[in-house]
Length: 130
Image (cartoon, rainbow, N blue to C red; front, side, top):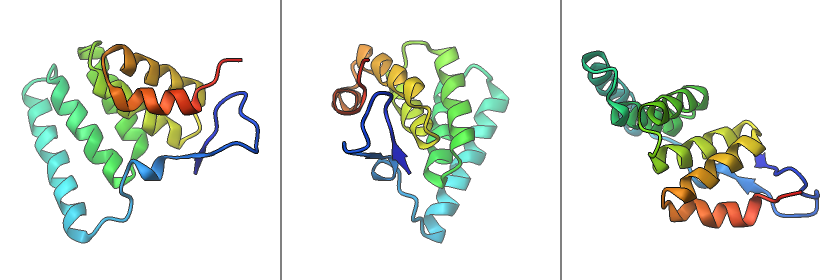
């Protein structure tokens, strides 16, 4: 699914989130991510303020292609640690999956503020101001 940015003409490049997430998982990989989710659930049940557990569970959900859950977990990680650049970056990629272009670009800009270099390259290429 292409990532279209507001103001982008149809003749310009498309941004495919598939480049950033492996959606062709083997059964072993799927089991590994499901196990990671269970481990993160355990950690969260022990400490609801464990922002890293929410982030890691978000990564696992995204790797499985369950982007709504990933977005929710990245959002919770950001709520608990507002300067967590990697969470903004990964939330931007997940939101891009659904065409939330403006929100994705806003998250990329926040990730850049917190030193995530990968976000800058994507933002410079795909986030245009009108």
